[in-house]
Structures are given as structure tokens and as C-alpha cells.
Length: 333
Image 1 (cartoon, rainbow, N blue to C red):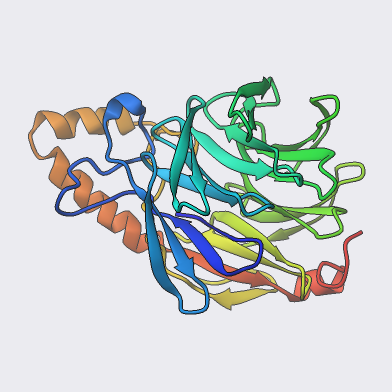
Image 2: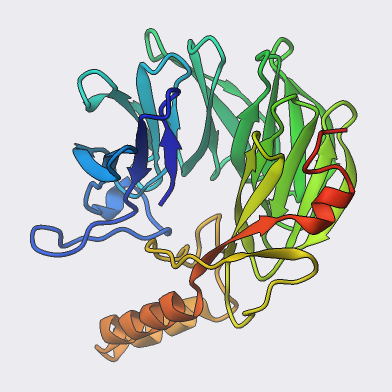
């Protein structure tokens, strides 16, 4: 599903959305709760020198976002359907704590001193603040609808959150624990990345099919570039000043504007109907009821799912020329 690297780059930790095959009879989906009884899944530790999996670590149901604390002490995993945060000890290579959070934990950011983890709980308007010493939880409440992705500046003063339901990115002053500014970037802002100097955010808006550059000083959108269908992931390469965008491609096969790159097929299933990451379609409930009533629902859903996987392969594209001319490659403004 997603991955994070150890501070020294030796390991990558990748979450596996759902398990299939012998011994796994309840694969997860995006519309769920702990009562759904979906199977627990796993995080894989990958040795980056060999690209081999050397540890398999059990976590909760439908693990999504993964973060490694700056001191390389913990790997933190948001379990979407378990409503929990898994805390993995790096030295023990196993889960040592599971913290109850609430409906749909998503983005995670650790403070630079590695004492606190912030978790966006997407089914609420709140961000959980988890003490990484005693694992107590308190809350930054009312930040906005559908908090999804988090990033924190190098000084640990400001936390940024994409608000999928509001179409904005919020800037939170962690000394005041309140929102101090917002930027409207597009419909359904999903993931973001911050430049190394902390001066710029790069935000993908899923339904607007755009990537926006936001100046953190005043939260002003200073550039917007079109992408192909449904941009969903993004990262910033500090060595080159380039931005990489991951797409969820439907019927669009070209790369618009001056973005170029290489497609990468995905392995995670698309978000299910009725979750914060994919709202239900107009007739989804009627279709589910009809399929269940005639006894052929499982087969039909399986066929539709395979079709979505074929038509909806995720891609990775590299943002280059348009960004180079405006300073995205060279420096933040």
C-alpha cells in the first residue's frame, strides 16, 4: 500500500493492504470497521541493498500509511479497518503496542525529537497526538473535514494537513495547537510533500487532477500544474529538486502538459465505495442490495473489482519541465 524508509536508508517498510489465499478468508476493503472482522495484515521490511524482504511483521487490518520515527526507534502504521495505530519496535522487528484512535487513521507525522506522533483520523475532523513514551493520546480537534495526509516542518513548529473533504490544506501551529492558515488547492487534496527548506508544499488534488505548489509562509498557492487522471501520491527529491507524482489512471493514458514519466502498475486494490477516500456512487447501495439478493453478488463484485484493477493501474510520473522553468527544481520560493 505505502512505504517509508529508515533514516539511514538501509530498510524500507511497506504495508500490505490485504491478505489473500489459504488461511485468509476475510480480505479487507475501504468500507469497514473493527466489527467487520477483516483479517490482520502485515508490514514487510525490505533490505534496500538486496531488495529482499527480511522481516514480516503482523499489524492490524488494512494497514495504510507507514512512518519511521527520526530516531529509528519505531515504525508507525495506521490500520484503516482496525481503527488503530500499530507501533513496531525497530530493534525487535515486531509490534509492541496497538493504540486505539477511531474511524480511519490515515496520515502520520513524527515530531523531529521523536517524542510525539500525529495521526490524521480521516473519518473525523481531528488529529490524534500520541505520546511515544507512554502512548497516551490527546487531540487537536476541529481542523476540518477528512484530514488525510500530514507533514511537519524540520523545526517541529508547524504541522500541515490535507483536508480531503474541505478541499484545503491547513497549517497548524503546534505551540498553540490551532489552525493558523489555510490554502484552497483543489477538490479532494490527498497527499503532499514539503521541500527540505520548509518553504514550499507540493499537494496533489485527486478530483481536480492537479499538483499545486503552496508557499508555507503565507499559505498562498503560487503554481498549479495539471496531471493525468487522479493524482494520489507525491514525493520531493531533495537532491534534484524534482517532484514525483503517483497517479490512479482510468481511461486516460497520456501524460498532460510537460510532465513525463514511466507507469508503474499497482498491487493495492482501489478504495471501496462508502469510505472517506472514495464516496459512494449514486446507485451503489441499490446495486449492492440487488447483487446480494440474486445470489450472484460475490461473482459480480469480483468481476467489477478485476476490471477496476485493470483500468485503474496506478502510475508514477516525474514532474520536470514546467516545474524547472518556475523554480520547482532549483529552489523553493
